[in-house]
Length: 433
Ligand code: GUN
Ligand code: FE
Image (cartoon, rainbow, N blue to C red; front, side):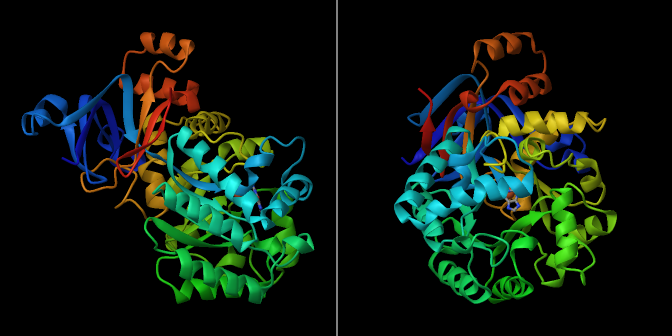
């Protein structure tokens, strides 16, 4: 039969602890069974209960000292920046000029784009990330390479070509017209193909003319289900620059709003320095924010105010933001998110982190019917985490008394080594040896 089952401790997110309260926000089976049929989850529950009703010859894989969770969701990452992660010394605008743009030039070569796409997706899966919202470069071939590679592995991925028609090296710019046409051709080729979706991707307000932002808004009008993916209010000098470039607009978010770029499939990376009016507008339009702690710390951008987003009921997911982010690991991203909250006198509960990493990310991407939890009927994207991934983690886990404590230790000490196996549509797509 096509049915397979996985037996381990299983933890699933049910919703935002800020809304439901912590106990109602998850379900946990100490001796759990996840049943997968034809790429979808068909059952989840206690192993002994479920096994009674399943055929006796069913294929059951057992994991000891392990925890199954939904696959992780990265709501903001740049695949072309894989090769320049950990570049020294600069804050956002100089970092872009000195490191990012030179790295992105190389994607004019489709062979390079293919090679990096493959390395990038392997790295995501090694870290337990099964869905991501991904920046390409200005070159359409960068997106063709990425989607081809994701399609081969049957992954649920969202990507788009950067639109950038000013304030960047000439070889890295398009025009309002060519950016529109090239995006359109990519949408026709990839959007809605299998598990793939397209994101209209103006890099950020400073690198697009008003004409280009208008064209981006037009694309969103012309097709159903497109995403809009950009950066917002990351760095103070960036915010000042946006005010100079768009003096008629009432702040950074208003530049995007004016060009009809807000909405339920719009994802804004960072939002570190937002005012209350901007938060209100994000909530009203059901737009989402990608919280990127390792990047915000690495570039010295600032401390993201998660409680403020909760108060405004803004959808939030986690983003690694590689190459400004310093890890592909969502576990390590949570570790840094916790510290960002501590610096503001706040606690980040591990069940909130679980939500952000899985179902919250899926909701931010309007994909919670498909992925982000282990509800029967969802696509079988999940990870197996190893409680003994390092000697230190194993030793620390032996002292941990509750699920909450074990989860917190996993999220603080865990990294790629904690990912034992990753599944996409019920297929093993990474296995640690
Ligand atoms: N703002 C505009 N482009 C970028 C980028 O590539 N990375 C980050 N972190 N911020 C940006
Ligand atoms: Fe980014």
